Length: 101
Image (tube, rainbow, N blue to C red; front, side, top):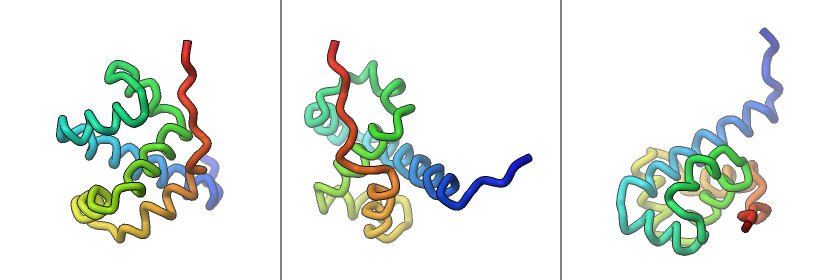
């Protein structure tokens, strides 16, 4: 089994944290509703979108844009809020756009 390179490990850790953040948003219908409204994505498309690293960057960017939400997530996840910024950078925030049919 080949060892992962540090950059690959960092990307995998960032994606895991972003999925955790998406689950955090999904735990509360009001939080999820706001996220869906801002992103324009439908609830049925979440699972597919979550497989895209740039969508996950968008999740982290969304959290980072709302300080109260960011602090709430950081407290629940037991991490420093600054970790969200590092995760956002590791995922390439600002690069995801939803394809529209």
